[in-house]
Length: 287
Ligand code: SIN
Image (cartoon, rainbow, N blue to C red):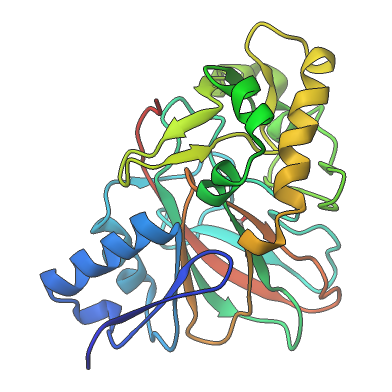
């Protein structure tokens, strides 16, 4: 087997010719490099147990145990991303990036397909490197040096609405549990991150705001922030040339970088079951 990295139109790369259960150090380095360069990597035909999934994720760093998601009953490191046939909401059903509501946003997540609907349930990804590169010059100038406040209180707090609607992305329900407002205020302190970050692994610039969790620019109200923020979001919504739609199959794994991509779990398979296992890896402060 020879490990091969094939870039995909839009965003990401498919990696073939390896088994994540038996990676050499050289193969792992090639995977890490592809992840940093392409923002999301797709692996097919991987037969993995939960322990294999954890071992692969741990090679990238410490695991973040998500404080809002239901955990796997036997493996607390694994967050359950599940939708049952009688449910209408899904998790992640709108453009977002995970954990921007943390002071040290997660490096990325490794999602393994465990039970798939007969059709539907794809995931879309967007490149925030390309979003930055293709931003019109006047917008680049306007956001240069700006910072933004991120929060998850409106998603995870008990007064949260079930949905997070964006102009083009449909519904979004990121969490699976509602938490008392006092507790959520303690758990989420609403960090401020630069709007344009220098990616900690690749050194490349990326746009770092997202419709689910970015609330306003620093020093501005939500209302004052809306005109410019909406232009940034609209630029990504319309950026088909830097989007990729991933069709899951048994044995598929996607690993995305939360600093340089957005993703959106399509909710088009009502009445069917979709069970995914997600492990998120700790990141660092962003500059
Ligand atoms: C997520 O947003 O973490 C879930 C993505 C998916 O289920 O495809």
